[in-house]
Length: 334
Image (cartoon, rainbow, N blue to C red; front, top):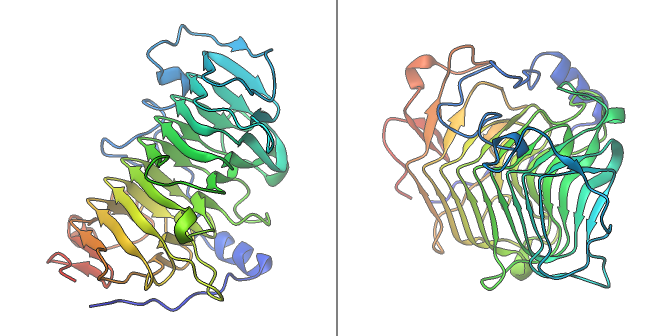
């Protein structure tokens, strides 16, 4: 059985502002707001949760862009736009652990990554202009990581104050996969007045050049106008996704919370299992953009969670199955 959801055109900026002003997507995830239920949060992601953190960071004064293969940077504070390589010089195996990347520059990436197999562990990506949400567009940056390389790992990282936390802007494959796990993405910037398309994890490419992506165990919750998990396709010339695993995540809010290739009719081997949809923040449009069974695609054991203080949802539905057709007492079998 295939469930196809009709594409929803993005409203105008004024329409989105009116929706957000009415309450949808307005909840902020500052400390103490809403139970994460054991999922990643500010206490176990980012530089302060890095096991090697000593209580302070050293300001980074090394080369920028970083172009040396195998470079490892630990416990550093990066200010301004940071680049891993260039379009003409793409380093391999650059690793960051316990680092803070701060930038206030709307429409620009906090980190531009041209590398192959770049790894970020226990890193924080945030604006430099403010210490905590909310973040206006003037105080923001567009991308936490704009990945224009080949293969990426982001693990136990925190992102806030962005337009898009991570953009997968080029290629991944079985040899150079993308793994995004146990990260905390929250509080996108200027949700009621910017021209950003707010996304947590964004790919607008699809097709054979974007495959073998694992999105595992993350918390991806914010107000916003587009998608928390945003594997998007162009409806005019759709290029769908293959070999994608999305498992064990806590998601909620955004525009359509999860987008796995539009209506998904051309997807192959897309696995969506053991995820939790929280109703803490109401999406502007719906929870799921679309889904299609067959071709190795699998939807199983996903759950609906209505926490205390949720913007919407019937508490009696908490714990029931989240299916492409809505809340159910039985799991999806398509």
